[in-house]
Image (cartoon, one colour):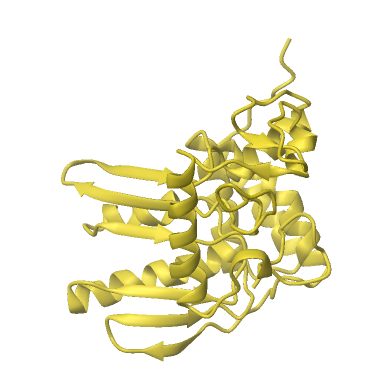
Length: 266
């Protein structure tokens, strides 16, 4: 018999907002993060939903997220901007980049905003879908903490490094594509670990590079790239565009969301 409970999404958003406010996040940013988490659950992406609230709170309590950041453009060339997130909540920084890129694309026809000094920004479809609803083709990608080995290796270097593309469809709902470059997002392994459920052997390996169905061993091991070397190649390109190009941390230099409570994510 399932012990799952059902909650009204508005009540859940209000609860998450209050928790984040209690832990120092300013109201606007708390609301953005809360709405983002609940929308991920509503979309069926539970790995990026309210289950993430606990780790955000832990990082807020430890002072690893700036609760009142001052966003600023490091470089501004009109159609391209490099945005410094001042170590703010990832969803709030990414939403500022989304707002900015739509504004610039309106003026220039095409625009790109790079981000540095941010944190875990959640489900990328949240941003690209809103761009598509406003009539833009939206593209978003992000590097992530290293949990994937280069193809043929056994030492983690790259992240799950997702990307999303959304396309407007006039009166219909936008076409929304959002994927990790690993077989699954690491959040699904964490969710299986919390539920004490096995995972498919194609998702991840243990610390020795052996495929495993144990989510705890997978959490301490490596995720596998989608499509083998193709997924590795996609992950590498996302890391270069999101990390190297912007001056943000990349590869193993990104702070781990769960494992490292002594440093910011960068």
